Length: 383
Ligand SMILES: *Cc1c(COP(=O)(O)O)cnc(C)c1O
Image (cartoon, rainbow, N blue to C red; front, side, top):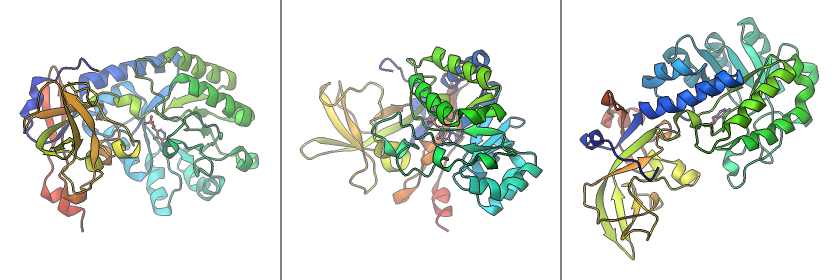
């Protein structure tokens, strides 16, 4: 990551822009396709992390389809990745939404037996393969309770205590999603909990969905263990296995190009950028984490240190502290890495902030602007 160089084309963009590098995206997809082949499973794009219809045809070359968190994402996958599988899980479906969903979703996961009973006839009469989400109450992550569906009191998934074996008739699948940015060791732990609590129901199922949070395309990810576990589950229970990563599909495949607008001195040097943590990279505040900027060091590591913040009026709109070998000039370009996932899908126009340009880049085709946004996009959402 430290050795990344910035393609010259990026400097042609004078406004903040997300740039999806399709060469890097393809590299991730090749890794995922190899897992599918070797493990004998199907991998879906979890659109919540990354949904850019422009590259859906590319993703569709490699993956089995998409998964959605509701009607709009399901429709996006259905329309933009034609012919591929459409899965959906939502913590609770509404009536009108269900009428639309059953027409486009091939697989549907329910979060409770009440919802399953309520929508069973409608879903089955449309030929939807239905499943139920499990909560194995097995936390394998620390610190980020906001991302832990197994945290005490969680509304996500059916616990062993609430499981209703007498209502399984018609259900073809089980689903769990408990991981977040984790390696295969956490999957091993989770599968052991799933098998112990729910293993007796697996032989009568057609599929088991392992959810997302598998950081498969990270260099240190233990792919061999993942492949081994998928094969073991398939063979032992005779089920088809699905994985639905979001992050891993577009990990490190995108950039956010920003510019320095001004510096302010108040005990430290504050750099005000044309991008905002609150609007353009909300996970910086929610996770929280400090995104990497190409060519930068930790605070104090290089000669010139800056605390970067956005141009909104929110005092806490702080991206982080960074140092550089040279004094930054106003108007200078700064390139944030790993900005494809959970970034533009979460954008908002708080404080009248413009939405950054969406673009793609590849060595062969260069820079391609997908969409520019303007005042109308801000105005429209305000009624
Ligand atoms: C968020 C989510 C995913 C994708 O998670 P990543 O951490 O992006 O891999 C998959 N399945 C469900 C049910 C989710 O909520």
